Image (cartoon, rainbow, N blue to C red; front, side):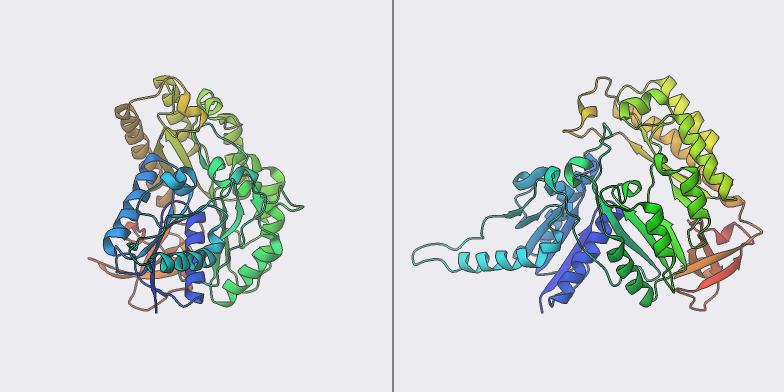
Length: 441
């Protein structure tokens, strides 16, 4: 039996696609082993959202080649979509976006070519075949790539990809060029997968996509109608939403989801900056005041929702005054979690040619300030849960110096531990949160 190892880089959509490729390999007789072990096939699902992601993608491809020089190395995803045949000499097969479903067919073609290459004519020396490149022009793609799962790496929570592509073209972002235009998965196929996962015991699903808020704009559907359909699946206890754009947060949308008890009060609402001038240069299409009103809407319908966000520091032209405005805005909104990213210059985006590119020292200093602020706000939010009883979906046992805890998440995605040796995995338990030790980081 051939052994295959897979490694994922990047977003939850990438993680979903990696797990789907793993299922395809298992269905065709491969034994799946950890990436650190010797295998006949290595699949690296790459990312290109930042320069660091590019570097990590290259590193994992090189690592795979070192682990077994004779293995077949497959590089899939956004990094190779951007670099093509220039991505790395270590790669045997390049599979771009919207071709991952064809992994098995591409592998079989390559193996046939490799077999012929290893049987040279008399007097010739055998060699590896040329890198097999399977790339599509993503700007022309209009079909959603159908991949599906019957199980996931997690035993309690399943991420389900329902949408791909993005039409926003934020000035700093390369992803619309790598993933193409918005393409949505039919709700009938989504429901079929949710039913299958619920039958296999998954109690929580997370709807995710490259630009989830755009779900259905290419079909006669929308995200709210999809959520309502998923809500009706028997056995499913929680629905969590992936990253949302402020534009989707309307009175109708929030009123609609708040009437669905399975929807968790945990919303990741992309911000990127709290300064209007910076938002304009980013092409974010809303103002700080509009964003603030969206947060107010969520807090109007939910008592204590967990609001999380992303912020980019050191965007080209960001002055000290603009940064101060952004920091003050973040202070005012009181997020549960704030994910801070230093601006990464990406060739092929508008922002790469902007004047006012900031040095790394400035980016690092500003990032540090916001990370400290974010930690303070997180602690303040979590403090509210002490002395309350919360429903926790248990996920794993964790051994600490204080003993063994069964650990899971509340509906707000606060990580909670219950000190007990009893196996509670995949059970919904009401936990009294008595002290800080039960809030796990």
